Length: 428
Ligand code: HAM
Image (tube, rainbow, N blue to C red):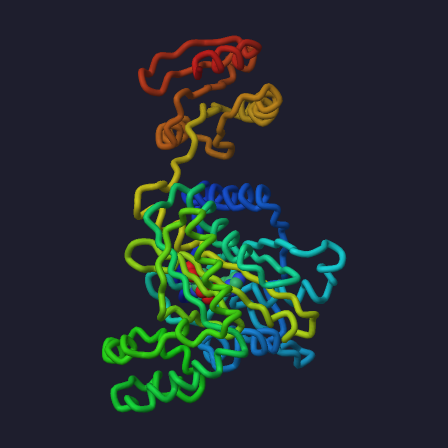
């Protein structure tokens, strides 16, 4: 045979900003999802799943053309039929679309409480806690009016979710950014103030000044901070209805004893918000989640006037936070006894034996396909099996099995018929 030189095949990595959730983290993710479901069930939120792809105009109309998400963060796909679809960057707009499309208000009644969990996509510069594919858990209440009791309840539900995960030391920043009656006045005031100090602003802020002035308050560039500190604040410009809504919400939140602080600079990066906006951060300031009221979104998408309020949490960040705080560690595989076979006959018998043990409710692990006894024993050791259950040709004929204590190395031959009983007793 010709002497073929073996070339090293280059490896392939996950796309930039996208990450695997490895087996060791799955238990933690399952716990986060289970906690979300328990909270949803208790507070009567119904699960909804929307497609990963949506039409791009859904997000353009709802999140807004002049937002970072729509301007530069959408993964766009052109279909063969020349339709423009995007990988969803968030799910509030898709939920609103589904609400209208399936007349959920009529079939399920209002207020309608919905929740979802799944992957979202934003073409961002990856950094700590910021991915291009990430997972959000979201809770939304769509109702017939804008009662602030629903704002309070939705914030409470977020706290209960974090509490269920034993996440403490979080603060909720709350603000009100007004409605379509009072926001334009505030916007003008903000623009006038910033125009006077244009020379001190970063390039992004100079652009935002004309396109989306509220986002000026979101700028993190150090040079813009002194300007921001003196900028007019939204709550000073609220109309009577918005002021009273905000005051009542704060009364409810105080009544509940939730820790909150007024955050006059909080505006959030999506255009659909009205009145209440909030964000929950752990220490270090990273936003674990955020949300707010969006009273006009459903109308804007062609539905009936249906005020709504909701939030979404970043699950990747929550899992990282839990690990960093030592609230939960990556899980070790559950140690189970290992079934080990020696020779063809025992191998054949093993497949059936696993089924018999499964029926008898005994959890074991096996290494079918690994022929070497040593390799199987090494693996049993690696996964911390308390016992190796060794089946050779002799044992198959005698209908017995060797039970080896992996710590002491002591072995005992046990009749196969007694195996379940013996192991269950030892594992107690
Ligand atoms: P958002 O603030 O854009 O709001 O995202 C909510 C949360 O998702 C953030 O606080 C963060 O934890 C997580 N998140 C966002 N982008 C990334 C990323 N690139 N990598 C990792 N995590 C990220 C919304 O999406 C709204 N739909 C929330 C809402 C629901 N408002 C009303 N209802």
